[in-house]
Length: 615
Image (cartoon, rainbow, N blue to C red; front, side):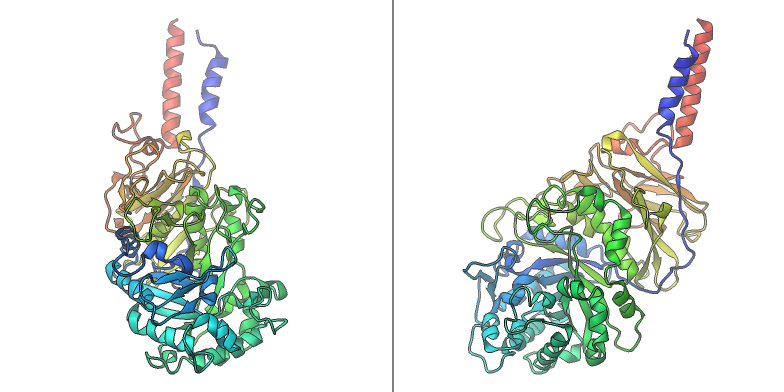
């Protein structure tokens, strides 16, 4: 006969895994009026190594990179895919108007590991224009050489032919880019990290390169853009800068404030599109092996909130400004760690995928209009994807890295069915904005015009393997969605086999693991979770596996039109004792909610008691 202790043990162990659902409060209206588009998160390519991804000319563009970029473009609605070309190498590189294939030629010399200059010419614009055409539209943001502003010595670094003024290089390169790219040109950034010009020796005759000096040089540079082969570029309002990151911050903790207060916008507000572009990484790996943070830092939502609050005072000034030519603030370059990322951190599901999405949505919520995830040469741990070895443009399988999934998901999470744009709000779930011990977070995405909730985003940062079967339930109250949109809510999941996973990652039941050619494939694996569909008119429960996240789409359609899903009233593929025989292991771990588990335990216990009494 079973003793009472055996029954107590039976009850106590399973009940330890039953956790109350997380209660969600969604404001009835967005807390701000800052509008972002589904193309908010773009890609930043380092100029020096762009040919590894784009080929040497228009005849060697790899089909796989076109597939990758097309997959992103198909998720940005009526907005082009954002691509920035620049970085440290842009300021040191030389524009050669007569250069043909290859479009980039490395300049020999003893250069810093993250600053390899190149010779480049108009073929670069041809390649960029063709890719934009192939994928259905791109918005290129181009950094331009700023060194030539002081002396002819700097001009020689930016332009290889004889020149008649210190700004001839800037005028010719900008004019040819504008002519070739046309509507695919988003803008030019003048000055990459001028706050580091002093420490890097880029202004040897200036002991302290200040915001005031930059403003004077910006005036000189912009004046030379009034007469280019494309006409007066200033009339197009396609100018931005500076891209600042570091030294001005140490000298002035709110260096964006300093730039604004020194008269930057009052002097150039009529020509600026982007009032400033920031670059900010949570840490660096410039001395490999000596970094501050490990994976746990990145999956604490409070740290993301703090990171996005950098320059908050200046950001608020930009967002609150009004006028006929309102400027925008962008994060022109970011990733998990500067100087190429950190192996086994930057290239993991936890950091490359989940953290990047969380940080991107946080920036969208506080006032940024765009952010660009940086990619460098082969072998860098934070890259989006890895081309095959061999000559640029050569055939062979590509490898998709965890950060690429972040662009897919962010674009869909920011979808705007009405094409009005979206407003993002941090829901501060369970106090996650300040409490680093909370392992969940979430956002609401509103339509920018009618203020209805279009998407909800939920993160589960619990550090477990998918095989552990852990999940967290989020209770969405009734009334969050409109009556029509709440009837057929689609839930898509981003999941990985573990926090450290680098390959087995799925989004919406599809994966790029081992695809090789950039094609999303059905993920019929134990770690994958298929889409689910739920009626949320009276509220609903959304289960999110760990580690992973879910995007809840009002109306039932994702931006790619993929609404294939299991139907349920609580976002679960099934709530019966017998799991769906066709479900994967990851899907099965979502099937049993707490009430079902308790029912099973009670029924089983009664059966044991009955059997015991008969013995």
